[in-house]
Image 1 (cartoon, helix red, strand yellow):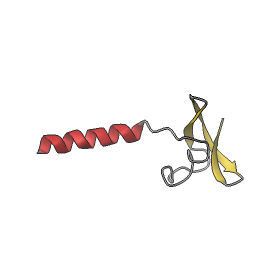
Image 2 (image 1 turned 90 degrees about the vertical axis):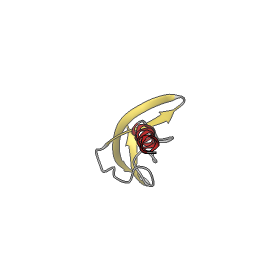
Image 3 (image 1 turned 120 degrees about the vertical axis):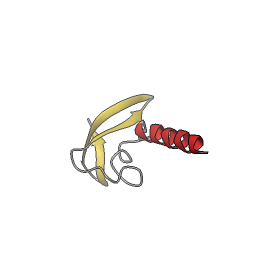
Image 4 (image 1 turned 90 degrees about the horizontal axis):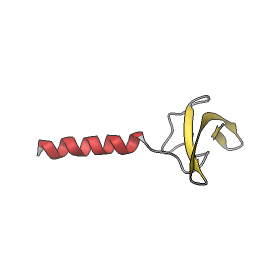
Length: 66
């Protein structure tokens, strides 16, 4: 039973580490990225590519920009 608990914890941690947001706004905003602040690094998908940037002030709150 402990084995399955450990495997489950590792899988959950691995899934969360590599999460890339589907768009620039969700890369810096809740519900999944509430901890981001102005200047935090962020990443999102655009046309099948991963775009890396930092959180900046946008029209609707923080957004990820390069």
